[in-house]
Length: 157
Image (spheres, rainbow, N blue to C red):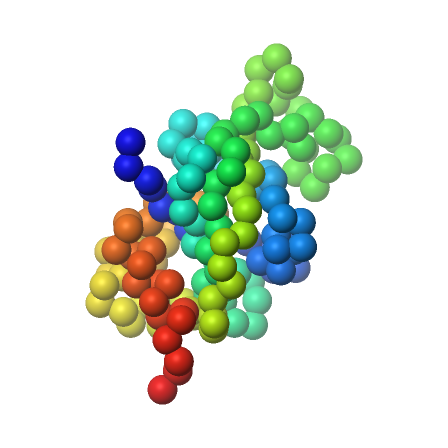
């Protein structure tokens, strides 16, 4: 099966790319959207590429790349009432939410901003950029992945 690519959004105040680098492997937990849960459970596989995107910060955009190192498994944070995102509907016997583990691959030379992404013709069909999209994880095509990495490694004019 061909490798897939994904964009993972996070608020750097919650978990940043630097946190991922420090940790070596990060659990991508706390997703509470059913479509994204389905991707985590069924579609995101070991070896898939990840675009690491910082949201809700002064400069919003892509800061690095990562790889999926553990495919979808039950999100145990839902079972912990003291976690930041508990869900009593989810149990060990019938897990409702899923997560994956990712490892850092490369910090980009510069942030590829949301505004730059919106202006790039090769990213015009990117799901993340569509009006009304609020998913924390979205699929990315190989060409979109390569374009963003290229933009993040070119020097600014």
